[in-house]
Image (cartoon, rainbow, N blue to C red; front, side, top):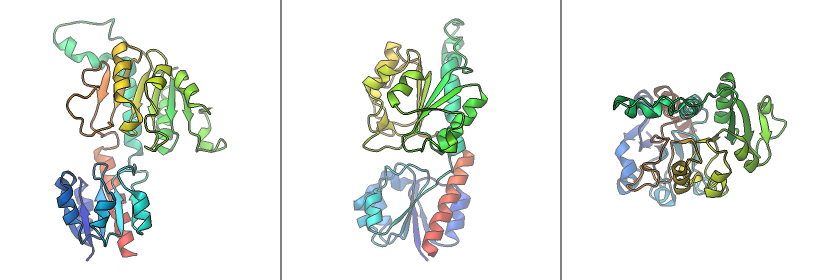
Length: 307
């Protein structure tokens, strides 16, 4: 039986299904113990990870029989895909598995940040009654800008339009004649979209081109009072610059699900920033999406090993 190593959490029924077909090592603690992970992978044919396990050349060196890497999610920045390709190791993202969960997260964050009321619960419970400060803004008629217009952004757009938002997007890789642009204001210039939108949501992978994409200069281009939502990757946004934009009041709020360092270390510049929603990289993780992603990954890996 082929050996499959799982280094982060996965839906148990999908693990049991794999275990009936392969020799499975399931240990979510491996993600925090690189030496133990390398040892566990010494005879592995497949490795299943989420976003924290760093699948680099050193790990692949320790797993000479590796044939497949299953990614419980879609981002591949933690996997050295060039080395995997050179060694004939197939890499399988769980494409489509978390579209609904991320889209719903973005819309929820947008509603909370625009309305503002739920960010003041502690004040109300302490006896204050800040009605004027907490009355907030509606989303109907506001402009939502999407940076990147792939499947998740398109699902977000559909939900936003149902709420009466005016949706605009920037994606130089999606052809102008693609049917997905129907009903969407297409921007050819990211700076123009940044200045146009009442809310911006990021939907791009982490690459050399997107690293630091939203630094101090681009954040300053955003409308006063606009909100920023990042469910993509942490290094795309300069966290210190974002903290400054929130403290100064230039931005009305932000939702950050991803960070340059995960978990956040002590002394993060975002600590204490006002009108900030911070979540631990869970926009794409719901009970339902975890089930979908786990089964997509289990079947991908099993198919690769069977071949």
